[in-house]
Image (cartoon, rainbow, N blue to C red; front, side, top):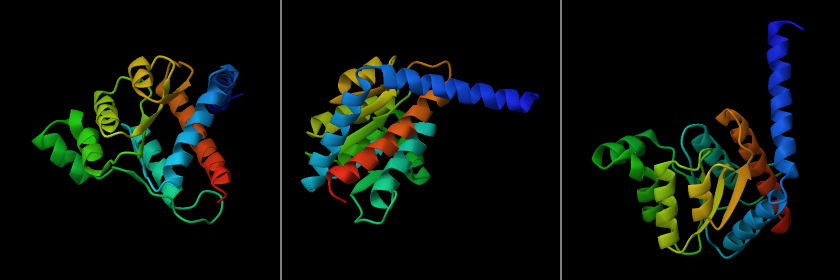
Length: 194
């Protein structure tokens, strides 16, 4: 194998190991199932889903919202979901207040009792995500956390925490998170008869 093939093989082996460890954790399936139940209950009651995260986790949060409002594997009615990813908003709130409150203020503006916040942080310690969770809880929203086993602050603050195994690099954790997002959407569509 040449160097590129070695990197490819090593990366795929690491991803497989991470997924195998995630599946072997006895908390994984119940946590994902509970997340789907929370989402279905909220959406069937006319509530919305909000999602947030930083960096790659913001991309995952946005991906989750666009899959719910758009199309996953087949056409169906759009589901009410949103993720803030507007650079003008980020710079406005970050400049006028603090980067720490960008998600908190968004949740305070748009969150309502019965809504769900999907909070994503590979470390589980992102202060702006934790502040959003605190705001959501104060509004009577449910919180689903996507984090890692080391993400104790976020996991402890959520109604349900879906935790990837610890990994030396956050990309492996993010790969688990995107898989969970797709699984939850698929299961949610089935549960809601869409």
